[in-house]
Length: 257
Ligand code: HXC
Image (cartoon, rainbow, N blue to C red; front, side, top):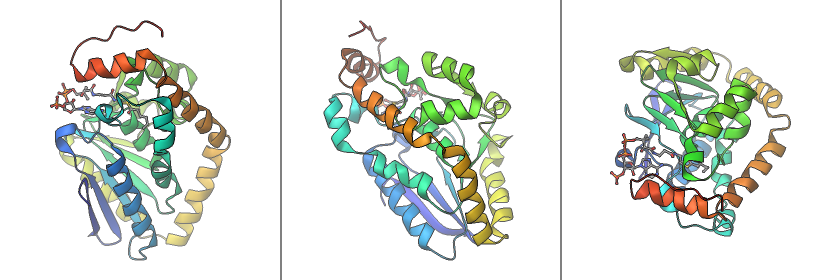
């Protein structure tokens, strides 16, 4: 594991996965997501582990998918990359996953957090789906999960403007379970994890599956449409301009093409 760090028993029965690409604000490239997938598969099979915490660092949970690796891709490149098979493991994991978030959780980073089961946020956390600003749209569940979490009007505002939500606002809208001071977010995630880890792992797994069934009814259809539309943005000049402008640190000029 190069881009993540896994500690199987950080506390008894509680595993910790740390995303570890700090210079890139934990931008989620395919290698990192493959490592996350492999770690989750292994932890799900490990009987000693009952709850999994995923975190980044103080500055960022993750600032999104890796724009530098996507900028030049065509729609067909994105389709063939088939990256979402690794992302799908987050929601397929049977054990509960708590996201412990400090700093940026943007784009794919916010989608990653929303795919986890519970979220503990530092008061410094910032959530958002800013893809629109670089000429694309959320592709890992943002249009579906954010809408279910915060309601249609707020989801429209956030996804169509790319505005960020503060930790307090995210709490108000039900996106996160609890907001705590910066020094406490990981500690608080462990407190929650340890409470769940004392309970029947069988009942916890079955309860999680049932809650997700309620949440995921119709989700498959929505995710399929979102993925196709996400790929389609890579056929536009605006996506090329948006991502190029980000890399060149300038304002993009969108032409609607
Ligand atoms: C690649 C990224 C990155 C990203 C930051 N970096 N976000 N690299 N992909 N998503 C890099 C920067 O280029 C920079 O590298 C370094 O990390 C530090 O970032 P700065 O921009 O210098 O930091 P700051 O000024 O503090 O601004 C932080 C920020 C900004 C507001 C988070 O970096 C930002 O807007 N990032 C992009 C957010 C975004 O658009 N995310 C959505 C991506 S699309 P250098 O080399 O210059 O030091 C997406 C689609 C998901 O997620 C679809 C499913 C897969």
